[in-house]
Amino acid sequence: MRLALALAALAGPAHALGCDDFWFHRNLVADRAGYCFSSPLGRTIFDNTDCTTTTPQLDPASADLIARIRALEAEWGCAVDTARTTVQVNRPDLYARLIDIPMPSPYESACVGWRGGLVPLRAGRSLTAPVLGHAEPGDSIGYSHEDAGGWSFVETGDGGPIGWVPAGTFDDPGCEMYAG
Image 1: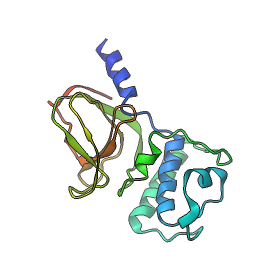
Image 2: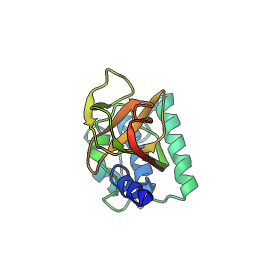
Image 3: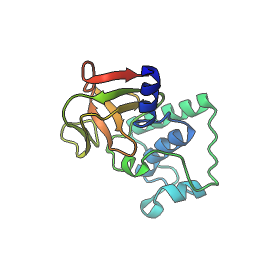
Image 4: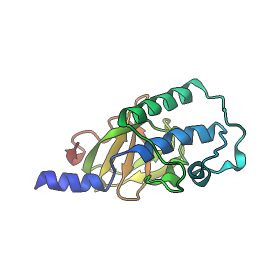
């Protein structure tokens, strides 16, 4: 019964990331670098009004993130149909507000039933980054991205806020149970 509850709770705060998520994360990095999309999917999901090139100059961190996501897409055999105009991505509007784009992971876990207080979820990996929302007592906190630089990227509830927190923020004994 506890496992069933944990799995049900896990379905709320996070979803198993897949090819659409990987495509979205990778192209969000490209969009920020000024990439001009030509596919129907790219033009629908990203605003081309501020695009500048089809060969953007990427900083080393962005180039590395794109390469790592491409490797994940290859590992999973992803072939997103860019002729369509929708993607199955959880909260793309909130991801667009991020300063630091997280590296997606095909694995997920969760802190089910947060027992602590309000926790600010930040747009970037800095205590001065804007707050996008808060994790609240009772929330289930989903992890489906890799930690980076001492920070964890988390999602709360179904449709709740997302953001960066210092790694270990939701460690034991702060949760009723853990899943994943």
